[in-house]
Image (tube, rainbow, N blue to C red; front, side, top):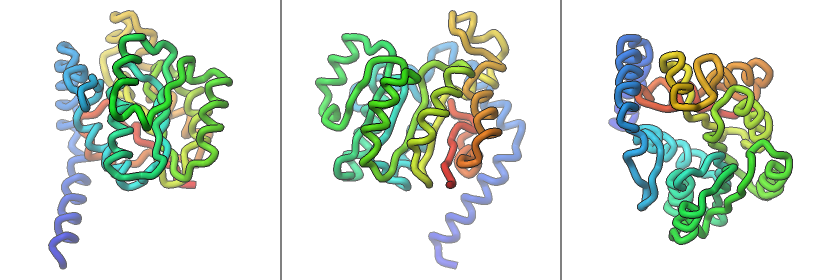
Length: 247
């Protein structure tokens, strides 16, 4: 066996075994809950802009981008802009001609908008302000995607079941076969019940992106949860949140 194959096989075996380690999973969730006390995911930047993600998810997203080589990445939820700049930077580094990122947010705050527009990666970004489930916004994005060959989607805006399900129904149609629809914040379903409403947020256990995924997959067999990815992401916002389009 050549050394590359041997390494890949050993890694696959380790991931497979790790996926069955319920104690490790519990420790990881306990750690995420503890770390959230300090807003852990707010502590990083990408190319100067705050990126509200676990570093693990950033690395994983780089992996799927390298594999799929999307020429369009659609992201709902912009906040400080770190995520859309990260996606744009990946397209730039991969040298994808005409690769572009669409960011959608119901409220693009002026100070964030200014920083994003002044960033060198803005040349690959288009922002739409409005609700991601608004028919007018959805039409703009759909029209933009018509000429694209490989489309990837990240849904990270309003995290309630109803809203996320509507987003999935709209944007899943744009995801190309072999590409991904990623749903951060499925971890809400694994945090203590009542944890987020205490922070004046409308989502909770039983009303989260995870419950939306479960309902979506019952009525849509074009997607599967990519367990090869999810099994190795022990510290992640997107527990079972990497959905691959298979047909």
